[in-house]
Image 1: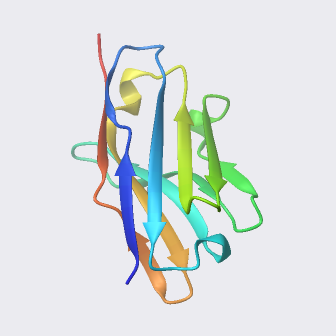
Image 2: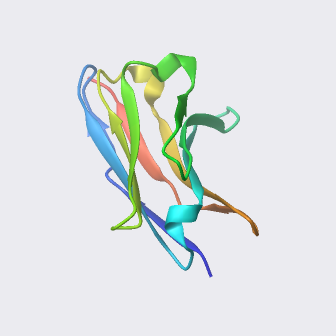
Length: 115
């Protein structure tokens, strides 16, 4: 059974930084594509960043140049480094594993950007 556990969210001032982590278990992590999504109140969940098993990355336009997704296959962990945070980045951030048997999600971690 695949489990994803996120950590690293919190309250940060505009312009600040946070690093989210997502540790996976129950799957051959290195073979799976991983992604971070976010969902703000009253809005649909949106894809923020993704990284393939081959380490190719992609980002939504609104975070390009500010966010960096990476993975450490020795730790079964994917990261999202978020810099120059803006109030509009406020949302619950979810880790996603896209595997052969389907998509798996973490429980989410709250990121709040406010002064």
